[in-house]
Amino acid sequence: MTPTRKAAPLKLHVPEPPGRPGRETDFSYLQISPPGSVRRPPLDSKPSETLDVANALVRVLDDQGRAVGPWAPEVDPQLLRAGLRAMMKTRVYDARMLIAQRQKKMSFYMQCLGEEAIGVGQALALEPGDMCFPTYRQQAILIARGYPLLDMMCQLFSNSRDPIKGRQLPVMYSSKQHGFFSISGNLGTQYIQAVGWAMASAIKGDTRIASAWIGDGSTAEADFHNALTFAAVYRAPVILNIVNNQWAISSFQGIAGGEAATFAARGVGNGIVSLRVDGNDFLAVYAASQWAIERARGNLGPTLIEWVTYRAGAHSTSDDPSKYRPVDEWARFPLGDPVPRLKQHLIALGAWSEEEHARVQKELEEEVTATQKEAESFGTLATGVIPSPATMFEDVYKDMPAHLRRQRQQLGV
Image (tube, rainbow, N blue to C red):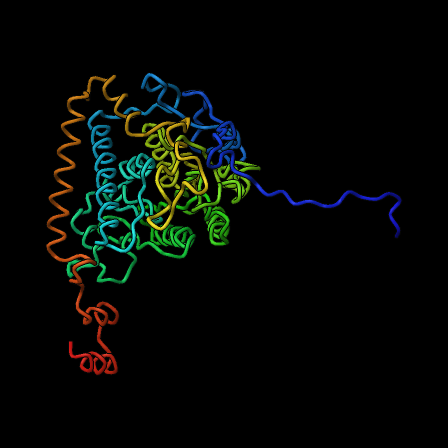
């Protein structure tokens, strides 16, 4: 059929970030709700009944550091002190390890600068037996759960005391004892693994739940959507965390779909109760995590949480963010820095002080420096003290097959 009029040429829409080098960022796209203004839905809410919360932003701390609104948790100040200390320790650890990488003591490193409240807050809300399925930027979970810094550093340095024996990238930790599932280098796989683990826990009649982690960019992976389907259909006892830190390497979160709708709204569309939360507000993180944990452990099914935060550092030591975003963008991020925000709240409670903060900062720097010195005594990538080749044959088979024994003999190890 011949058209009666000439149609305009078709065009594609390519999302553009609201800021570029030399151009100040317009953060109005974030859709920030006032502190304390978002309602707290009943635990047994239907997914469709949480759409308003998925499009808003749960916040507890106001500009004066006061806890306001229905999400303000009743929490012991000692837990908040522990949370602040773990966040500070994570930041000190990150800073030292970044320097060590630049000194060629390890091959690769990734910071979680600016995102510490998310990992620490949820780690302190979970039970010890619950299993986390993290990405490569959740080292704060391990630190909050008491995993030894020495083991973390020895893995980074790929030395003779590396607990992973050189079988992972430096930042891809693993500790069953601390509920930290082995990190996968293939983005998105941990989501389906977490849902499967949670389903298995329910099948066995256990009480442990799973916590899955993914970044905003990786929500474009097929595994993300597969995980949501299984979690919704089988009401798996799992928390589905999306860390929206605005950037997936050098691509803005809009490229992954964050421009047209919130990432939390995807959960509602898949039949999952969903929240959108200020990830730089420790109290909001802890309260939302508690809410989702109670739902999962009460057989009410999965909860998807979008944590709105900002990746303050480079994607990794292989990245230069000044090439694709303003250098001062973090300083102007509307949700601020999670460490000073929690510090301000604790000072307002009379449970912290500037003097104690300075003292703890110095103590943590000394602790991390001393641990690094001990870790380096076992070797670094620069000194060439690495695990024996014999370790490649270990922890693979319960009983080593004959052909591997012959190969080991041929290596002379």
